[in-house]
Amino acid sequence: NIKACIFDLDGVIVNTAVYHYKAWKRLANELGFDFTEHQNEQLKGVSRMASLNLILGWGNITGLSEAQKNELADRKNNWYVEMINQMTPAEVLPGAREFVRACRDASIKTAIGSASKNTPTILNRLQLTPLFDAIVDGNSVNTPKPDPEVFLKGAELLSIAPANCVVFEDAIAGIEAAKRGGMKAVGIGLADTLKQADMVVSGLAQMTIDTLSHL
Ligand code: G16
Ligand code: MG
Image 1: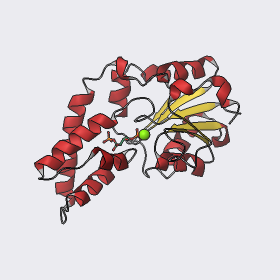
Image 2: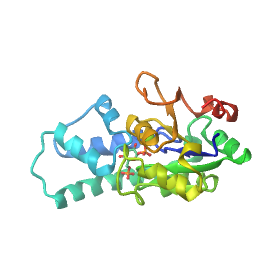
Image 3: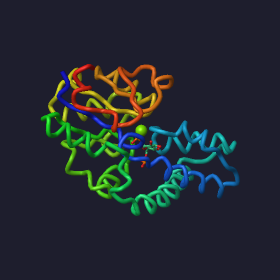
Image 4: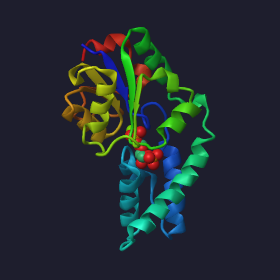
């Protein structure tokens, strides 16, 4: 039975992907190329440096030093931070705040498991920080999804066995991470894409506490 719900951030709680896309696109344009919203799908759930490497590949830019890559990643992040600092609580995705609250009311622990180093800023802007018992993000994890580290750390902080945890994820790598960690996984998106998930819904508005008992 489910004793903890662990939520991915981007794509599950909030659509920060639009801001990531704008900032990466601006960087690519400064470097003299462009990429599509379709290509941007490949960046969802992927860490900052891994995203940069994918984008540089699309622009056929090779041979940059680590220092040059760090400078580009910082440039993108500064634009991204400018945008997320303007976010309001109205940007929480439909049903997300309500479902997290419902978990807490049912004595189910709640955590965030995100790749983003900007997680604390985003949760504060959305006024969601107090709704989570634990927050694990890109600042505290060594190995990115599909490695289960981010979710196992969350379970450990909550003192709940992985088998009693369910992860909510929109990325294939995130679902894989949950399953490799021995957890249940609810996909947010399309069943055709998130094949490894135990169930798939279009968003947290579709979730109820009762649904958890069917996992
Ligand atoms: C999010 C986004 C990714 C982003 C990553 C790192 O993941 O989906 O596009 O590259 O975080 O973000 P930052 O540059 O802020 O550290 P998640 O795990 O919340 O879906
Ligand atoms: Mg995500």
